[in-house]
Length: 69
Image (cartoon, rainbow, N blue to C red; front, top):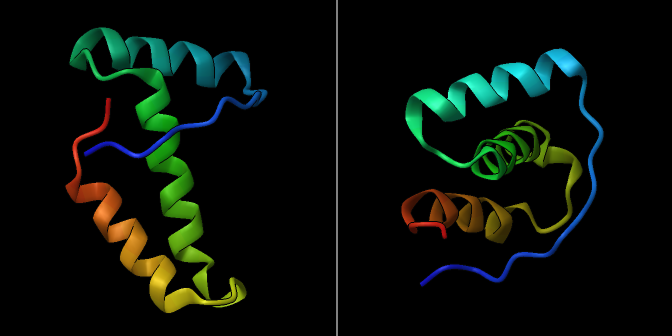
């Protein structure tokens, strides 16, 4: 079952945008999915700064095993 997603705005560089578009065209994976994966990587790398990291890590692992819409 997919998790509820919220809408937010992020600003990326033109280069990042172009590379994400190229990646999307080649893989057919939505750009938003790559952005979510990038956020998950940053959160996991910085987990020591986040309270409740045990349950948070489990949530990240679950997020990578669950299909996303």
